[in-house]
Length: 419
Image (cartoon, rainbow, N blue to C red; front, top):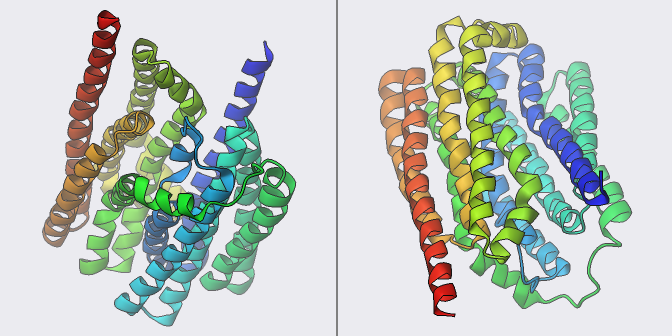
């Protein structure tokens, strides 16, 4: 095995491990809260974590994708870091505004605020992970995520078990992430990797402008996945919110698996597009989609056979009445996973405005459908609202992506013929 393959394998394994542990932690947190604090607190944690994830997209803004696929490298590391500090500040302002409007109880506000800070720290770490990935050190970010995931979960369980207080448990997550971010992410790894260049404030601000549509797409995308939860928050109880959170959680495995598959290939996709090798580009993305669909079918089958039974044992709550809800939601996430891959494709070839249109349409549909169906059909309405929205988004993304790739390839062929 040559050195390049060894590096790829090392990056893939650690990135998969770190991303997996970190992503599955939301599942483990919900289990812990249900077992220790009860189903009502689990409902509060579920909607708070979903909101913190939406706020996270504000701090993340354009995210690591645009940073790593920046072919011309006009924007330097320091500019990206300053931009991320700005977006994290905007995120905290947004969180404050949201809590003022909602007027939750002091307890619920505390949980929301701490989880928002926790996700803000994740967003800042991601810009450092981008620097690592650009230097072929993706495995370092995987190691960081692994440490944060394992240590954070351990402290969350210990603190919650000792105090029985969800606020103190969330505070422990913030403290663990601050320590690892400073000591490992920055001091040990990225401080020596940051390019020796002058800070360009204009570049940092230009990112806000140039990547605005990428940000809106990400924000709308997370809202679309959680629109039903907000409808439940408006019309139903915390207990129903918790149950919906339980059956939604396994579906996130689809998103996670897709990230596992796609993330290590970002540099390769960028390289193929730079060479205008659309034939290989299409083959690679087709194989990725095929792998995701195969995994999705397997996941739906497992959910139908044993899903409610396994989840019931995990959470200590009977979920036998929600077997079809679980299968429909996981099946819908196959559509979402393919849409995510198309997002990667279109972002790599720098077609973001059309995605903005797709997401705005999908977000409007999600808002309308979720409120109508949840109000009239409760948790079944939430399930079908998610399925309808993700199905429409999939159709829009598939048609648009195929058309743009065809058009790009046609333009290249015409230029070659003229020469």
